[in-house]
Image 1 (cartoon, rainbow, N blue to C red):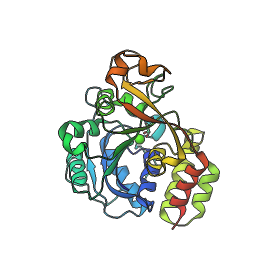
Image 2: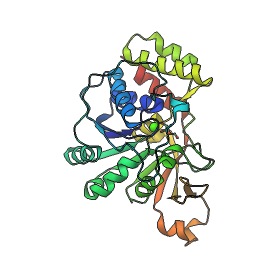
Image 3: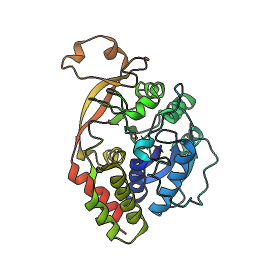
Image 4: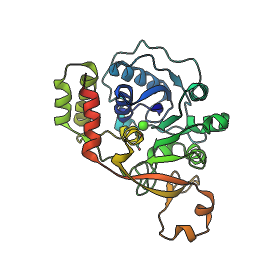
Length: 310
Ligand code: BDR
Ligand code: CA
């Protein structure tokens, strides 16, 4: 499967990149970076370091938006540390950044791909919204967007809004209303795949770089935060290649872009009689495939096997 990741690396983005770069069924054709968990420069530096740890080949990584469309950036240092990778002091990568801006790289990769591309955004949707508006004909060629973001239940950045959508609600509204087939891997399942000390020990027992890097990341996150870490964004990648490990439901979704307490909420129409309710959500919103449950053991094992295998 040809995939492109859009990331704000980020601890759980790192888990997702490591997996995507190493899984035999995934052809990771490019990565675009956007600000979110931390500033854009950190995101780019972290993404290159993670590709080093994965032992990845020459995968183009490009620079995207350094701030949301309208709001000021608000980072998640309290979760991911000042540098976005729990401040481990990992040496900088010598990989070069692709000179093309993110929207250009997205266009080129999708146009040049011999098979349909699945786009997997794991971050605020600023780059993707700019791409959809810049190159709508190319965007229409996408197989599907499988995104980490949103929630059919509660929020995390606020009581009702998930971080990626809350960070740039206008961008999310553009993406969710685009009509491109979307699978939403949101907060309903985001924390299901937990990693703790025993997983870190298991990974650190293997001697190769990817396993050591992952084990160190998990061990330090758990030490600093005092609780297990979720594989988070990885679940969206897993859902794209192994949809049989997910249970989904189709809901109409609109993104709240008002400036009230629910700004950034993905409002899901879960009414049983939604089909017969000709109101705003029903008229305006396309259906989204929402991941509501996952096979936890299989998904976690798929990640562990991919990361710790040689
Ligand atoms: C999302 O926000 C970020 O902190 C994570 O990387 C994930 O993409 C969860 O709300
Ligand atoms: Ca992320």
